[in-house]
Length: 298
Image (tube, rainbow, N blue to C red; front, side):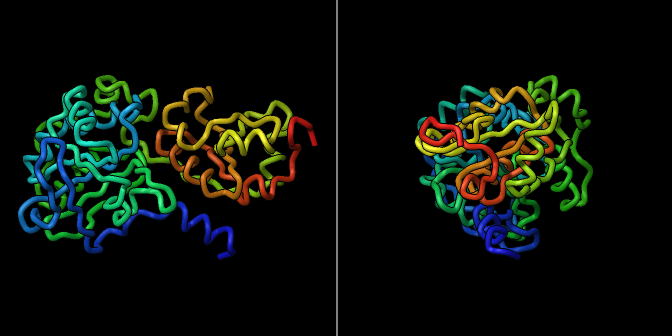
């Protein structure tokens, strides 16, 4: 593995493997209770839903999907908790606004989430991710992005050796009820992020009638100092609330300064159902295409 690949792997931080012992999570719930995952060992499965934003329609719809299946999870002795970096009062208001019956846990700066590989290594923000901890205290499932609640429910049922309680809703029914189908069809696994060298990214963008769109996810100052003229600028921390501005869900190429932030952006895009998403290895530091530097085309 070359240096760029090692750096990319470090920044993207793979989910915890199944079968490993779950890290400790000890946080305050939105109604004031202190929640510790070891207290559930040998008694209840725990499903942790790490989410980044409370100002995103896709996140709202995703959490509502879990609410629709909450009673089924409880019949299989599985408790659900949302986890985010927002204060308890904001989480409480958010939960009430969505009509959720499971508690939200306040994780300042995503510190506990880091142990679950559910926050960024270099910046204190949460990733959208689910982690299922079985009764024996091990990781039963860990998936990045907007995971499918039905699949997680089936995983718990398999552990319990029981059928899924009630008549499961179809993907079409859930999508219609939640409005989430506009972002991702439930049951569809995220596409893989594709890593591409600068030269190949330029070729894709310069094809005749190219369907590809380049997204620069750096800060405004970085973008204004030096960028590709065909790039759409959306900083990585604004992407969850602005991805609709891209106008397409396929043939997307993300670029940053060195390849780390764009890898995270590409992962987010695939998690909401986008396909054929590329990350430019080495970023603008190795960009071989045209540039606009200080207002002058190069």
